[in-house]
Image: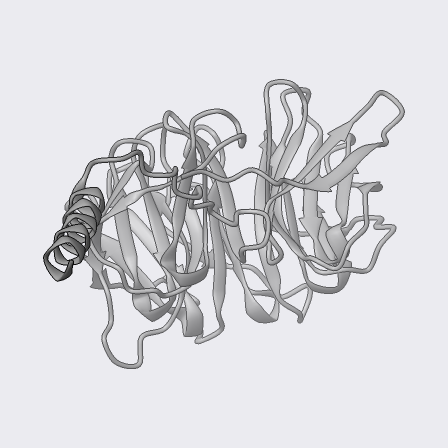
Length: 333
């Protein structure tokens, strides 16, 4: 009897062992989703790779399908420092700038990035960059920081510009033909060049708050914008400036020009301001939410995609100037 019971127990143990090691289907793993709708995003751009966004923890994301799905870009270094700006000189070649003097370069539209600068101690944030007509690259940032690269973004050296103080420099912008240039920043700082960035001069202060961006609208027409809803326009390549009429006194952080020439400015409180007369007058095209919008691109179907400190936002304006507004809820594995 004991022998029989022992055989039964041995058979059960053997069967359990065989079953435990036998192959069987594995349940699918839950999709790893990129929370693009809740991340702090500082900028959004279009390139040959698609739509590119960047922001918190040094993340750069790429969407090949106009914001429907996203995947992380390939990066040589993971610094987890906030990326403040994306810059593209064309569809392929660009820079990502960040805190701690972080600079990354791309040559494939943003799918892969290589680190070319990082300050281990006491690094200050960089805010903007551009490729100059002569081929050099210029980057600007906090406390009047100016860096220049003469070897196509591989190395960077400190530089100086005439009339420059230690105020923060927030953006460098140019005309489409590369002849006119503008650098704007803190305390109403404006530096201008009309000879392809060979020489610069400081503009007499016309505003003592921060200017966050500037955009060329053709000819000698420029618009500069900044904190507390301050927007100015110039018809003489930045020599003198006049105040624009603004319906919302909110800080403005980014812009885009539509194919039809409409200027859109984005800022606090989810506000988008629109001007169709070269920046003299603005209307509210979109408002709502607590997030501050930091950048905007217009998709081919007319929908706006906007980066913000509360995630990616989408807005579909219609013929009456209103539309649907919602955060995007799309991620990627």
